Length: 259
Image: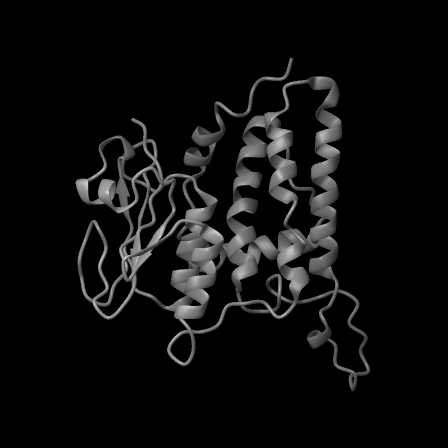
């Protein structure tokens, strides 16, 4: 069964969605998994689910068969690749723009800001998924090591950042010198938009690379593992993750056998 991702969010005083209607709630349809019911693997959708959860927005997820979309969804954004958002009849299709919109619209005092304080918290993992994609798609044994090394360099960069104390962690009046960061997440002890972007991708990398390339994130990357351990302990992340089998199914045709 061919299924895809939709995220038609309708926010406002009379908050509704195309699939279910209930004032004050958001009902974003998500990608159905291989069983037709569980959530499939899509880091962009999970990213937005995490944002909504962290904002404190009440929402339900409804899986939709993209080969038999409800008529209302067909009319909503014909020819548009999801996720997308509808607000006051205005369609937004770029997930970056959707994220910016949610951050600006769901703002204090009712909702928390999620933007990180440090720009590098966003930048540090920006190439990781691209390196993973090249690695998992490679079919040539002789070049596999080079792709793996490129991926490991990005993990090293992330690990260095996570282990380097941020300025607000350093107490100039303390006699103890902090040499290794103790923070929980990318930008501090609270999840931010940077985490919502990176964590779904890290989860996919961890599962798919192990399944199809027998690759494990090296234990020497203590900062990365501390980060993942803290993230999986948070419901906003762990409860929006697809099952491992859904990630494996998604990459089954992508991870070609090496020749």
